[in-house]
Image (cartoon, rainbow, N blue to C red):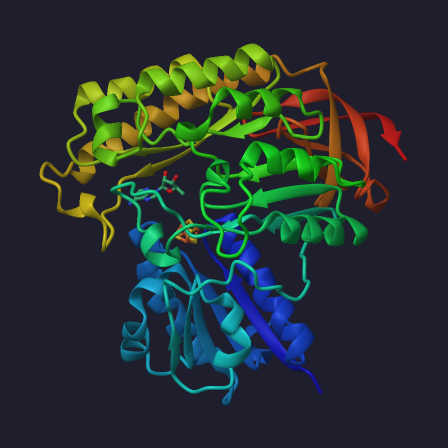
Length: 436
Ligand code: 5AD
Ligand code: SF4
Protein backbone atom coordinates (compact mmCIF):
# COMPACT_ATOMS: atom_id res chain seq x y z
CA UNK A 1 0.00 0.00 0.00
CA UNK A 2 1.28 3.44 -0.82
CA UNK A 3 1.99 6.02 1.87
CA UNK A 4 0.32 9.41 1.81
CA UNK A 5 2.10 12.75 1.46
CA UNK A 6 0.58 16.09 2.42
CA UNK A 7 2.62 19.11 1.34
CA UNK A 8 2.07 22.81 1.92
CA UNK A 9 4.05 25.34 -0.09
CA UNK A 10 4.69 28.96 0.91
CA UNK A 11 6.74 31.64 -0.86
CA UNK A 12 7.84 32.06 -4.43
CA UNK A 13 7.78 30.14 -7.71
CA UNK A 14 11.15 28.64 -6.77
CA UNK A 15 9.51 27.00 -3.77
CA UNK A 16 6.62 25.78 -5.91
CA UNK A 17 9.12 24.04 -8.16
CA UNK A 18 11.07 22.67 -5.17
CA UNK A 19 7.82 21.14 -3.90
CA UNK A 20 7.23 19.58 -7.31
CA UNK A 21 10.73 18.11 -7.10
CA UNK A 22 9.98 16.73 -3.62
CA UNK A 23 6.71 15.21 -4.84
CA UNK A 24 8.47 13.77 -7.90
CA UNK A 25 11.15 12.08 -5.80
CA UNK A 26 8.75 10.71 -3.18
CA UNK A 27 6.09 9.45 -5.57
CA UNK A 28 8.44 7.76 -8.02
CA UNK A 29 11.08 6.39 -5.63
CA UNK A 30 9.44 6.11 -2.20
CA UNK A 31 5.93 4.84 -2.92
CA UNK A 32 4.03 7.95 -1.82
CA UNK A 33 0.83 9.33 -3.27
CA UNK A 34 -0.49 12.83 -2.64
CA UNK A 35 -3.33 13.62 -0.28
CA UNK A 36 -4.98 16.91 0.61
CA UNK A 37 -6.32 15.49 3.86
CA UNK A 38 -3.76 16.15 6.56
CA UNK A 39 -5.35 13.59 8.94
CA UNK A 40 -4.75 10.88 6.37
CA UNK A 41 -1.08 11.70 5.74
CA UNK A 42 1.92 9.53 6.71
CA UNK A 43 4.26 12.40 5.92
CA UNK A 44 3.47 16.10 6.31
CA UNK A 45 5.84 18.58 4.71
CA UNK A 46 5.82 22.34 4.93
CA UNK A 47 7.98 24.12 2.36
CA UNK A 48 8.73 27.44 4.00
CA UNK A 49 9.64 31.01 3.03
CA UNK A 50 11.73 33.36 5.15
CA UNK A 51 11.79 36.49 3.06
CA UNK A 52 9.66 38.37 5.62
CA UNK A 53 9.20 37.82 9.33
CA UNK A 54 5.47 37.04 9.46
CA UNK A 55 5.46 33.65 7.73
CA UNK A 56 8.35 32.52 9.96
CA UNK A 57 6.29 33.32 13.07
CA UNK A 58 3.38 31.45 11.61
CA UNK A 59 5.52 28.37 10.98
CA UNK A 60 5.58 27.24 14.59
CA UNK A 61 1.86 27.65 15.17
CA UNK A 62 1.25 25.84 11.92
CA UNK A 63 3.43 22.80 12.67
CA UNK A 64 1.98 22.77 16.20
CA UNK A 65 -1.41 22.37 14.57
CA UNK A 66 -0.09 19.63 12.24
CA UNK A 67 1.21 17.78 15.29
CA UNK A 68 -2.22 17.89 16.96
CA UNK A 69 -4.24 16.63 14.01
CA UNK A 70 -1.83 14.16 12.40
CA UNK A 71 -2.06 10.36 12.52
CA UNK A 72 -0.12 8.81 15.40
CA UNK A 73 2.95 7.67 13.46
CA UNK A 74 2.93 10.38 10.82
CA UNK A 75 6.15 12.35 10.36
CA UNK A 76 6.49 16.10 9.97
CA UNK A 77 9.28 17.63 7.85
CA UNK A 78 10.21 21.29 7.50
CA UNK A 79 11.80 22.22 4.15
CA UNK A 80 12.72 25.40 2.31
CA UNK A 81 14.22 28.76 3.20
CA UNK A 82 13.29 28.88 6.90
CA UNK A 83 14.66 25.35 7.25
CA UNK A 84 17.95 26.65 5.79
CA UNK A 85 18.40 29.49 8.23
CA UNK A 86 16.91 28.09 11.42
CA UNK A 87 18.23 24.53 11.00
CA UNK A 88 18.42 22.60 14.27
CA UNK A 89 16.60 25.35 16.14
CA UNK A 90 13.39 24.07 14.54
CA UNK A 91 13.77 20.63 16.14
CA UNK A 92 14.75 22.20 19.47
CA UNK A 93 11.63 24.34 19.47
CA UNK A 94 9.37 21.69 17.97
CA UNK A 95 10.79 18.25 18.93
CA UNK A 96 8.04 16.40 17.07
CA UNK A 97 9.60 17.54 13.75
CA UNK A 98 11.38 14.55 12.13
CA UNK A 99 13.64 16.35 9.67
CA UNK A 100 14.77 19.75 8.46
CA UNK A 101 15.74 20.08 4.81
CA UNK A 102 17.17 23.36 3.47
CA UNK A 103 16.25 25.00 0.18
CA UNK A 104 19.60 24.01 -1.32
CA UNK A 105 19.36 20.36 -0.32
CA UNK A 106 16.06 19.32 -1.88
CA UNK A 107 17.62 16.36 -3.69
CA UNK A 108 18.31 14.72 -0.29
CA UNK A 109 14.59 14.29 0.43
CA UNK A 110 14.77 10.52 -0.21
CA UNK A 111 17.46 10.21 2.48
CA UNK A 112 16.07 12.42 5.22
CA UNK A 113 12.69 10.71 5.36
CA UNK A 114 14.45 7.54 6.52
CA UNK A 115 16.46 9.18 9.31
CA UNK A 116 15.22 10.55 12.61
CA UNK A 117 15.96 14.18 13.43
CA UNK A 118 18.18 14.79 10.45
CA UNK A 119 19.09 18.36 9.54
CA UNK A 120 20.43 18.89 6.00
CA UNK A 121 21.12 22.56 5.37
CA UNK A 122 24.52 22.63 3.65
CA UNK A 123 24.68 25.99 1.85
CA UNK A 124 27.55 24.87 -0.36
CA UNK A 125 25.76 21.78 -1.57
CA UNK A 126 25.71 21.71 -5.36
CA UNK A 127 22.64 20.12 -6.86
CA UNK A 128 22.86 22.07 -10.12
CA UNK A 129 23.23 18.87 -12.15
CA UNK A 130 20.90 16.61 -10.18
CA UNK A 131 18.14 15.09 -12.33
CA UNK A 132 14.94 15.17 -10.27
CA UNK A 133 12.09 12.78 -10.95
CA UNK A 134 9.31 14.25 -13.01
CA UNK A 135 6.26 15.81 -11.43
CA UNK A 136 4.31 18.87 -12.54
CA UNK A 137 1.15 20.28 -11.05
CA UNK A 138 0.12 22.04 -14.26
CA UNK A 139 -0.42 20.19 -17.53
CA UNK A 140 0.16 23.25 -19.67
CA UNK A 141 2.76 25.37 -17.92
CA UNK A 142 6.13 24.01 -16.85
CA UNK A 143 8.61 25.57 -14.46
CA UNK A 144 12.21 24.83 -15.42
CA UNK A 145 15.05 25.84 -13.08
CA UNK A 146 18.03 27.49 -14.77
CA UNK A 147 20.11 28.27 -11.68
CA UNK A 148 20.31 27.68 -7.96
CA UNK A 149 21.24 30.26 -5.31
CA UNK A 150 21.89 33.98 -5.57
CA UNK A 151 25.15 35.93 -5.79
CA UNK A 152 23.68 39.35 -5.08
CA UNK A 153 24.19 41.06 -1.77
CA UNK A 154 21.02 43.12 -1.42
CA UNK A 155 21.24 44.31 2.16
CA UNK A 156 17.60 43.54 3.01
CA UNK A 157 17.50 40.01 1.62
CA UNK A 158 17.99 36.73 3.42
CA UNK A 159 17.91 34.57 0.28
CA UNK A 160 21.69 34.31 -0.30
CA UNK A 161 21.82 32.88 3.24
CA UNK A 162 19.08 30.34 2.55
CA UNK A 163 19.89 29.31 -1.01
CA UNK A 164 23.64 29.90 -1.10
CA UNK A 165 25.85 31.05 -3.97
CA UNK A 166 24.62 31.14 -7.50
CA UNK A 167 25.38 28.23 -9.83
CA UNK A 168 23.90 27.98 -13.31
CA UNK A 169 22.45 24.71 -14.52
CA UNK A 170 24.19 23.53 -17.72
CA UNK A 171 22.22 24.45 -20.87
CA UNK A 172 22.00 20.87 -22.18
CA UNK A 173 20.21 19.80 -18.98
CA UNK A 174 17.82 22.76 -19.25
CA UNK A 175 17.00 21.94 -22.87
CA UNK A 176 16.47 18.26 -21.98
CA UNK A 177 14.05 19.33 -19.24
CA UNK A 178 12.23 21.70 -21.63
CA UNK A 179 11.87 18.90 -24.21
CA UNK A 180 10.55 16.50 -21.58
CA UNK A 181 7.99 19.09 -20.43
CA UNK A 182 6.82 19.73 -23.99
CA UNK A 183 6.54 15.99 -24.70
CA UNK A 184 4.27 15.79 -21.66
CA UNK A 185 1.99 18.51 -23.04
CA UNK A 186 3.41 21.79 -21.73
CA UNK A 187 2.94 24.77 -24.02
CA UNK A 188 4.42 27.44 -21.80
CA UNK A 189 7.88 27.24 -20.23
CA UNK A 190 8.67 29.39 -17.20
CA UNK A 191 12.41 29.67 -16.61
CA UNK A 192 13.24 30.02 -12.93
CA UNK A 193 16.13 31.48 -11.04
CA UNK A 194 16.82 34.01 -8.31
CA UNK A 195 18.43 36.25 -10.86
CA UNK A 196 17.77 34.77 -14.29
CA UNK A 197 19.48 37.34 -16.48
CA UNK A 198 22.73 36.78 -14.64
CA UNK A 199 22.67 33.26 -16.12
CA UNK A 200 25.99 31.75 -17.14
CA UNK A 201 28.32 33.48 -14.69
CA UNK A 202 29.36 30.26 -12.97
CA UNK A 203 28.75 26.60 -13.78
CA UNK A 204 30.02 23.71 -11.69
CA UNK A 205 30.66 21.43 -14.66
CA UNK A 206 30.40 23.27 -17.95
CA UNK A 207 32.97 25.57 -19.40
CA UNK A 208 31.41 27.25 -22.45
CA UNK A 209 30.29 30.84 -21.94
CA UNK A 210 26.60 31.28 -22.58
CA UNK A 211 24.40 34.08 -21.28
CA UNK A 212 20.68 34.39 -20.60
CA UNK A 213 19.90 35.94 -23.99
CA UNK A 214 21.52 32.95 -25.72
CA UNK A 215 19.67 30.55 -23.44
CA UNK A 216 16.36 32.23 -24.31
CA UNK A 217 17.10 31.71 -28.00
CA UNK A 218 17.94 28.04 -27.44
CA UNK A 219 14.73 27.42 -25.48
CA UNK A 220 12.65 29.20 -28.10
CA UNK A 221 14.06 26.87 -30.78
CA UNK A 222 12.71 23.75 -29.06
CA UNK A 223 9.80 22.34 -31.09
CA UNK A 224 6.52 22.60 -29.26
CA UNK A 225 7.50 25.52 -26.99
CA UNK A 226 4.84 28.11 -27.68
CA UNK A 227 5.44 30.58 -24.90
CA UNK A 228 8.36 31.47 -22.65
CA UNK A 229 8.24 33.40 -19.40
CA UNK A 230 10.94 33.84 -16.77
CA UNK A 231 11.26 34.97 -13.19
CA UNK A 232 13.00 36.92 -11.76
CA UNK A 233 15.25 39.13 -13.83
CA UNK A 234 17.36 41.88 -12.21
CA UNK A 235 17.14 45.46 -13.57
CA UNK A 236 20.93 45.83 -13.35
CA UNK A 237 21.49 43.09 -15.94
CA UNK A 238 18.91 44.39 -18.42
CA UNK A 239 21.37 45.25 -21.17
CA UNK A 240 20.28 46.23 -24.71
CA UNK A 241 21.00 42.77 -26.13
CA UNK A 242 18.64 41.17 -23.59
CA UNK A 243 15.86 43.76 -24.00
CA UNK A 244 16.06 43.51 -27.78
CA UNK A 245 15.80 39.70 -27.73
CA UNK A 246 12.87 40.04 -25.33
CA UNK A 247 11.16 42.45 -27.72
CA UNK A 248 11.71 40.61 -30.97
CA UNK A 249 11.44 36.92 -30.04
CA UNK A 250 7.78 36.06 -30.66
CA UNK A 251 7.80 33.16 -28.22
CA UNK A 252 8.82 35.34 -25.26
CA UNK A 253 5.73 36.66 -23.50
CA UNK A 254 5.64 40.42 -23.32
CA UNK A 255 5.48 40.69 -19.57
CA UNK A 256 8.58 41.77 -17.68
CA UNK A 257 9.11 41.68 -13.93
CA UNK A 258 11.41 44.56 -12.95
CA UNK A 259 11.89 44.54 -9.18
CA UNK A 260 12.39 48.23 -8.39
CA UNK A 261 12.58 47.92 -4.56
CA UNK A 262 12.96 51.71 -4.24
CA UNK A 263 12.84 54.70 -6.58
CA UNK A 264 15.44 56.63 -4.60
CA UNK A 265 19.02 56.32 -5.84
CA UNK A 266 20.22 56.86 -2.28
CA UNK A 267 18.12 54.03 -0.89
CA UNK A 268 19.06 51.82 -3.85
CA UNK A 269 22.70 52.41 -2.94
CA UNK A 270 22.05 51.46 0.69
CA UNK A 271 20.23 48.37 -0.56
CA UNK A 272 23.26 47.54 -2.79
CA UNK A 273 21.03 47.09 -5.80
CA UNK A 274 23.68 48.27 -8.26
CA UNK A 275 21.46 50.64 -10.31
CA UNK A 276 20.02 54.13 -9.97
CA UNK A 277 16.56 55.59 -10.43
CA UNK A 278 17.69 56.92 -13.83
CA UNK A 279 18.95 53.53 -15.05
CA UNK A 280 15.72 51.87 -14.02
CA UNK A 281 13.60 54.50 -15.80
CA UNK A 282 15.77 54.27 -18.91
CA UNK A 283 15.29 50.48 -19.08
CA UNK A 284 11.55 50.67 -18.46
CA UNK A 285 11.07 53.42 -21.07
CA UNK A 286 13.09 51.44 -23.60
CA UNK A 287 10.78 48.47 -23.06
CA UNK A 288 7.64 50.60 -23.40
CA UNK A 289 9.04 52.20 -26.55
CA UNK A 290 9.95 48.87 -28.20
CA UNK A 291 6.78 47.01 -27.14
CA UNK A 292 3.63 49.13 -26.82
CA UNK A 293 1.65 46.26 -25.22
CA UNK A 294 4.29 45.21 -22.69
CA UNK A 295 3.25 44.72 -19.07
CA UNK A 296 5.78 45.65 -16.42
CA UNK A 297 5.38 44.30 -12.89
CA UNK A 298 7.52 45.14 -9.91
CA UNK A 299 8.37 44.57 -6.25
CA UNK A 300 8.64 47.59 -3.95
CA UNK A 301 9.78 47.78 -0.34
CA UNK A 302 8.65 50.80 1.71
CA UNK A 303 10.20 51.88 4.98
CA UNK A 304 13.73 50.62 4.29
CA UNK A 305 16.09 52.00 7.00
CA UNK A 306 16.88 55.65 6.32
CA UNK A 307 14.08 56.10 3.76
CA UNK A 308 13.04 59.76 4.05
CA UNK A 309 9.79 61.29 2.82
CA UNK A 310 11.76 62.60 -0.17
CA UNK A 311 13.14 59.12 -0.93
CA UNK A 312 9.63 57.71 -0.79
CA UNK A 313 8.42 60.42 -3.16
CA UNK A 314 11.08 59.23 -5.64
CA UNK A 315 9.45 55.78 -5.46
CA UNK A 316 6.03 57.32 -6.15
CA UNK A 317 7.59 59.27 -9.01
CA UNK A 318 8.90 56.09 -10.67
CA UNK A 319 5.50 54.44 -10.19
CA UNK A 320 3.78 57.41 -11.88
CA UNK A 321 6.24 57.41 -14.75
CA UNK A 322 6.41 53.66 -15.45
CA UNK A 323 2.72 52.99 -14.65
CA UNK A 324 3.39 49.39 -13.60
CA UNK A 325 0.58 46.99 -14.45
CA UNK A 326 1.27 45.04 -11.25
CA UNK A 327 3.01 45.95 -8.00
CA UNK A 328 3.91 43.61 -5.16
CA UNK A 329 4.47 46.00 -2.29
CA UNK A 330 5.90 45.21 1.14
CA UNK A 331 6.83 46.96 4.35
CA UNK A 332 10.50 46.45 5.08
CA UNK A 333 10.97 43.50 7.43
CA UNK A 334 14.32 43.20 9.24
CA UNK A 335 15.76 39.76 8.61
CA UNK A 336 18.42 37.82 10.49
CA UNK A 337 21.82 37.48 8.78
CA UNK A 338 21.27 40.64 6.69
CA UNK A 339 23.21 43.92 6.99
CA UNK A 340 20.15 46.20 6.86
CA UNK A 341 18.72 44.91 10.13
CA UNK A 342 21.61 46.71 11.90
CA UNK A 343 21.32 49.97 9.96
CA UNK A 344 20.59 53.11 11.94
CA UNK A 345 17.40 55.08 11.28
CA UNK A 346 14.96 52.19 11.12
CA UNK A 347 11.62 53.59 9.93
CA UNK A 348 8.70 53.27 12.34
CA UNK A 349 5.94 50.82 11.55
CA UNK A 350 3.47 53.69 11.55
CA UNK A 351 5.34 55.62 8.84
CA UNK A 352 5.91 52.45 6.79
CA UNK A 353 2.20 51.56 6.96
CA UNK A 354 1.20 55.04 5.89
CA UNK A 355 3.60 54.90 2.92
CA UNK A 356 2.36 51.47 1.90
CA UNK A 357 -1.22 52.77 1.82
CA UNK A 358 -0.24 55.80 -0.26
CA UNK A 359 1.67 53.61 -2.70
CA UNK A 360 -1.22 51.18 -3.03
CA UNK A 361 -3.77 53.97 -3.52
CA UNK A 362 -1.65 55.52 -6.25
CA UNK A 363 -1.44 52.14 -7.90
CA UNK A 364 -5.23 51.68 -7.79
CA UNK A 365 -5.60 54.98 -9.69
CA UNK A 366 -3.13 53.78 -12.31
CA UNK A 367 -4.89 50.42 -12.62
CA UNK A 368 -8.25 52.13 -13.12
CA UNK A 369 -6.74 54.20 -15.89
CA UNK A 370 -5.16 51.13 -17.53
CA UNK A 371 -8.19 48.86 -17.27
CA UNK A 372 -10.51 51.49 -18.83
CA UNK A 373 -8.62 51.06 -22.10
CA UNK A 374 -9.01 47.28 -22.25
CA UNK A 375 -12.65 46.95 -23.35
CA UNK A 376 -12.95 45.87 -26.98
CA UNK A 377 -9.35 44.67 -27.28
CA UNK A 378 -8.54 41.15 -28.43
CA UNK A 379 -6.01 38.98 -26.57
CA UNK A 380 -4.65 35.54 -27.36
CA UNK A 381 -5.13 33.57 -24.16
CA UNK A 382 -3.81 30.19 -23.02
CA UNK A 383 -6.57 28.75 -20.83
CA UNK A 384 -5.44 26.62 -17.92
CA UNK A 385 -7.90 26.81 -15.03
CA UNK A 386 -11.56 26.13 -14.35
CA UNK A 387 -13.27 28.74 -12.19
CA UNK A 388 -16.54 28.77 -10.29
CA UNK A 389 -19.65 29.89 -12.13
CA UNK A 390 -18.89 28.17 -15.45
CA UNK A 391 -15.82 30.26 -16.17
CA UNK A 392 -12.42 29.31 -17.55
CA UNK A 393 -9.37 31.42 -16.90
CA UNK A 394 -6.01 31.91 -18.55
CA UNK A 395 -3.34 34.50 -19.27
CA UNK A 396 -2.77 36.79 -22.20
CA UNK A 397 0.72 37.02 -23.63
CA UNK A 398 1.26 40.20 -21.57
CA UNK A 399 -0.03 38.45 -18.45
CA UNK A 400 -3.57 39.75 -17.97
CA UNK A 401 -5.78 37.19 -16.25
CA UNK A 402 -8.60 36.70 -18.75
CA UNK A 403 -11.82 34.81 -17.96
CA UNK A 404 -14.55 33.62 -20.25
CA UNK A 405 -17.63 31.39 -20.12
CA UNK A 406 -16.60 27.84 -20.94
CA UNK A 407 -15.57 24.47 -19.68
CA UNK A 408 -12.85 21.78 -19.88
CA UNK A 409 -12.74 21.87 -23.70
CA UNK A 410 -10.90 25.17 -23.52
CA UNK A 411 -8.21 23.96 -21.12
CA UNK A 412 -4.78 23.81 -22.70
CA UNK A 413 -5.98 25.73 -25.75
CA UNK A 414 -5.09 29.12 -27.12
CA UNK A 415 -8.02 31.34 -28.06
CA UNK A 416 -8.58 34.93 -29.17
CA UNK A 417 -10.79 36.65 -26.64
CA UNK A 418 -12.56 39.98 -27.13
CA UNK A 419 -12.66 41.87 -23.84
CA UNK A 420 -16.12 42.89 -22.63
CA UNK A 421 -15.46 43.70 -18.98
CA UNK A 422 -12.35 45.00 -17.26
CA UNK A 423 -11.33 45.15 -13.63
CA UNK A 424 -8.18 46.08 -11.75
CA UNK A 425 -6.89 42.54 -11.57
CA UNK A 426 -8.56 40.65 -14.39
CA UNK A 427 -10.52 40.91 -17.62
CA UNK A 428 -13.54 39.06 -18.95
CA UNK A 429 -14.43 38.46 -22.56
CA UNK A 430 -15.90 36.37 -25.34
CA UNK A 431 -14.00 33.77 -27.32
CA UNK A 432 -13.92 34.72 -30.99
CA UNK A 433 -11.49 32.08 -32.24
CA UNK A 434 -10.07 28.88 -30.79
CA UNK A 435 -6.72 27.65 -32.12
CA UNK A 436 -6.76 23.86 -32.55
N1 5AD B 1 11.50 43.01 3.79
C1 5AD B 1 10.47 43.25 2.94
N2 5AD B 1 10.42 42.75 1.71
C2 5AD B 1 11.44 41.98 1.28
N3 5AD B 1 11.66 41.36 0.12
C3 5AD B 1 12.83 40.70 0.20
N4 5AD B 1 13.39 40.88 1.43
C4 5AD B 1 12.54 41.68 2.12
C5 5AD B 1 12.55 42.23 3.41
N5 5AD B 1 13.56 42.02 4.26
C6 5AD B 1 10.78 41.50 -1.04
C7 5AD B 1 11.53 42.10 -2.23
C8 5AD B 1 11.69 40.93 -3.15
C9 5AD B 1 10.44 40.13 -2.85
C10 5AD B 1 10.51 38.71 -3.28
O1 5AD B 1 10.32 40.23 -1.46
O2 5AD B 1 10.72 43.10 -2.80
O3 5AD B 1 11.79 41.31 -4.50
FE1 SF4 C 1 11.46 32.17 -2.33
FE2 SF4 C 1 12.92 34.02 -1.10
FE3 SF4 C 1 10.84 32.99 0.15
FE4 SF4 C 1 13.05 31.54 -0.28
S1 SF4 C 1 12.89 33.37 0.99
S2 SF4 C 1 10.93 30.90 -0.62
S3 SF4 C 1 13.72 32.28 -2.27
S4 SF4 C 1 10.76 34.25 -1.69
